[in-house]
Image (cartoon, rainbow, N blue to C red; front, side):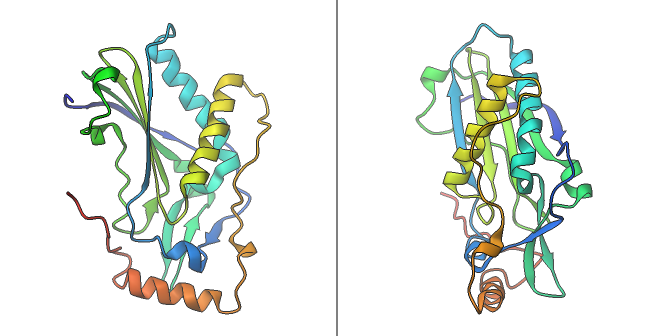
Length: 223
């Protein structure tokens, strides 16, 4: 497809104070610290609504959805004193928010899907901590339609969590305004994952998978 042109980069902040300042990754989470992000790319055909209106609706509904998924607005951070990796959900960090990219490209939906769509996905650089958890890119296709791309850090988010997030975001976008969301959300409390040696196992995994922190070894092998 044709070159994607970045038009604007916005930051969508968490609109309310987070319930917790930090969430320490469990030993199960740390296994994914060096893997490439979870990526999702959705295509939508042409609509009667102007792209500018769609963009504003997506931005405002994302802001309303983030309180239910507040770790997504945080950053993965290394704690040298303990050797642990945590999600920094402090007000200063989540106030900076999620990167939201507006872009355009010359492609047409019916010609996409055969490869080469990587530029429609946002870059989520997890090679060094602190690292963002989530990034979003909305690309207007000149041949009508748009592409919505998401990238989420695999140590924080799995495929099911991404779909739960999208369901909540879509519900907020449909409702508009300040209407409350009536949907189930992913559990963010890692303390429910109990193991008597959990902290020790997590530190060992971190030492093995990312021995040069804050530099993270990226296990992704480019084709």
